[in-house]
Length: 195
Image 1 (cartoon, rainbow, N blue to C red):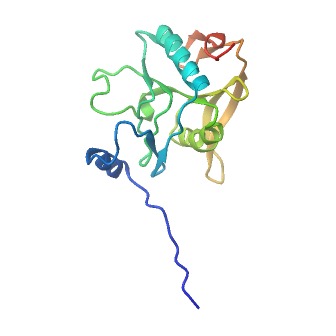
Image 2: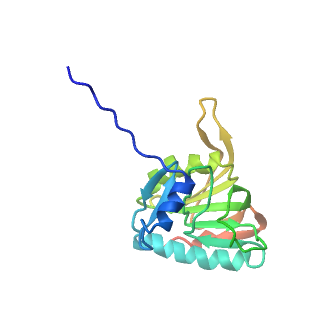
Image 3: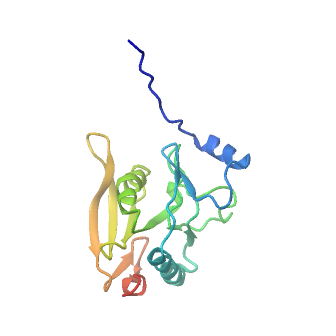
């Protein structure tokens, strides 16, 4: 009888991940992020994704100028082994302009992901990750169904998994107030490609 070998994947801490980057293990062209200790290769963006991203950047910048900072596809540090790079994060203004470190959960007002080929990943991996970190609001621009999924009120189930107790569907011809600045509304007709 032969012994069965069990293999496990190496999980990285944030310090180990940063050390690999410092050693030049990754290049600037590598599109990666650390999720629950695993280094994840991000999918290339298609034309609808980049168009939506460009539209969103323009509209968000106009709305929150002077009130908050917008970060686009930059790292955030949440949990001890996760440094995702969401499509957008609206963060509080900080005196050091985040030179001392990436935003953490306490800095984040809203996380936004744009999803077509990554829809399952953004719902099943990133959504519970953001909820576990206590991120109060998560928006998912669903380019497959052509609507916005606005999630709020993170919670933990009895079994230990995390999610959001409120999910609102907003159609591309509607507007939605920014959760961090409810007096400001985002017109989705200016965001979705081809609308």
